[in-house]
Image (cartoon, rainbow, N blue to C red; front, side, top):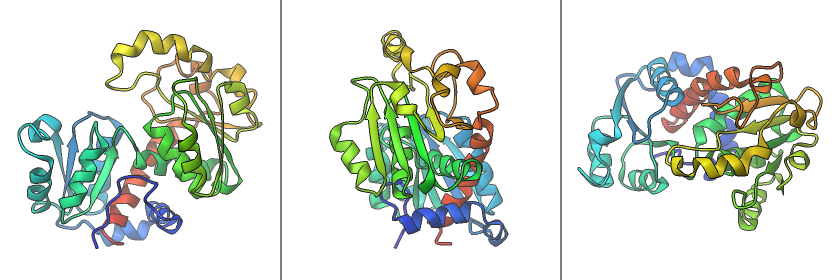
Length: 298
């Protein structure tokens, strides 16, 4: 059976732990599970960390990455998603796509004879969540013993992070403005994975006692027209030293980047002693190796 990695929600706890174990395994690198195989890296949305981490992960596992821009394949304009996936599956050992709509990776997985990895969609960012878990457990301890706070927009990154934290038995707290928060149904869905979830429109309440604090840009790609309004709405949710003071002593700060100092996070926090954002970014490569090895059945 072909393994796909489209989101964290579809993984069992054992599968999630297996990917995390593979991510840090030197034996996987030695085994070269992608030897003599290509990996299609299709970028409908451009990226810095995702492209570099995935390309180098493919190389480390013995494969050959082929970077392809979205306009070169033209999902549903030049060709249907299904035709693209069927053809590319004949060239490559893995198809990976960074897309606007999650339905694209679902449609690819439905017809592909090789594994499909979601490198980001509007619904999920599983590779980021894997890197975040690796970083948190390295810096703060087992997820099951942590309270992990998310401050800002409840977006695709927050959703995947919440899924991972809850599956691993942690506590996930959300500090989001009204209209940009998780719905009651969404909170129930996260809780069904096994963790505890709390949400407040008050960022101080959300961050209280947190061992790790996450945030993300207020304006994601495709939301540029909302920039002025979002800056006003999210201004009270800037993670600065005053807000971080309400977290647990020695709390760590994380950000998936790119970051905007002076907006969602102050320069003092982003560049300060609590920040592990560079370590977190480097673990995108660690996570990519584990994800690729797992879909290859290692």
